[in-house]
Length: 291
Image (cartoon, rainbow, N blue to C red; front, side, top):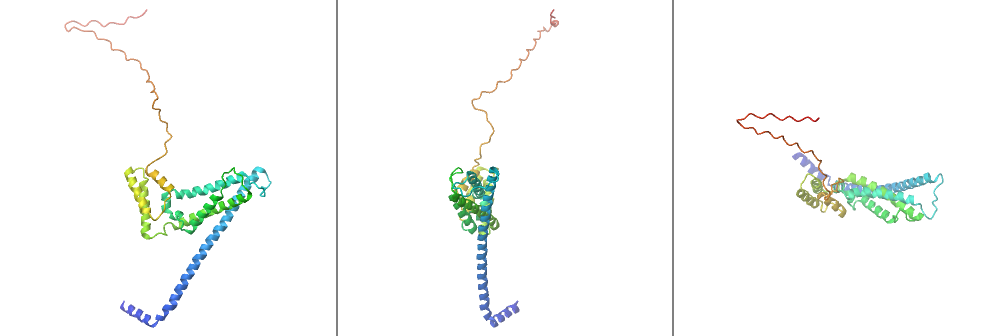
């Protein structure tokens, strides 16, 4: 060991000048990694744009195909000033489906703990999805029966396509990242919150145990994951066991009870003749036969 240290000292004395090219190489490697990371981000955004265009074309093709099946072989007149309502309805359905998938993460605290990037607007892909959602919501017509122009439906069609692709990419990225963006102590807090959450919604636990677990879940997530008001409301109902009423029918309070079935009165026992202790018993009377 001593020889190795002495050899290392001798090398440093004789070749100290190598530190400058080594530092230059390290700086170049850092810049190359930064450029590579930037290119990867640009490629992801380009992929997002390309998929959005494909998704838009797919939605439009499905809508036009559905119209062609009902109207015959003729092609829909895209130059008309008013767009058919069935196209708007199909876009509404696509829009609502994506929103429902997003709310599945937004309102489920367990999923938010497992995939925190889905609620973190600092993540580039999540931020892109939230912007696409805002745009699609703003361009959505008032109702499926509303009269919209070709320009309006074209913008809404593009927005829904961007919204769908942005969600898929953000979801895949969140499932890839999981809790890797947190420090070691923060990941420990997320693990504790996940375990406590199971107790908070456990039907076999007492109400006091669920309340304490719920309070500790909020403490563990404080500063790590921002829960929406809607998610907090859903979780509090689960902790309080506010379950929907069962569909079983209950009898009315003022209903009269059903009368009991009438039963034939039990026959009275035949009286036994009184027998004097010193006299013989009289003969038993036989029933008289009717003529």
